Image 1: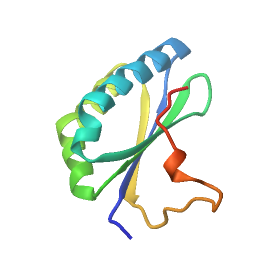
Image 2: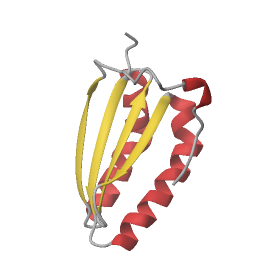
Image 3: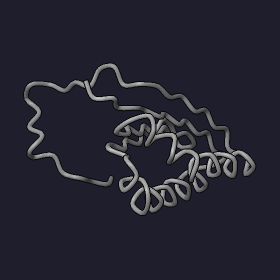
Image 4: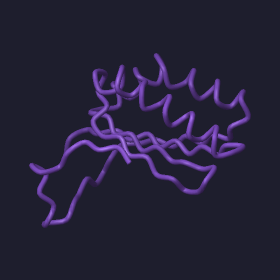
Length: 112
């Protein structure tokens, strides 16, 4: 198993507008710096109109920590100061699995 590392960030916003604004901001940051610094997979989940969860998989812990130190910690601090409740969970990926019918060669990037 590769040494993939995962960081999960759950955010609770005051309203839907601030949630949507943050999603747009993070999409741009990810495109600019995330993938070039070891981010492998990014998955966002809408938990409600005011909650989102970001699941980021990095090639290794070193890459994840570098992105955190350069960008992530400041963004989390800034969002907390803006009144957003933020919970950060992280750890080594111990299982990375997908169904036998999944054809990864046909998997494309997409935004919903």
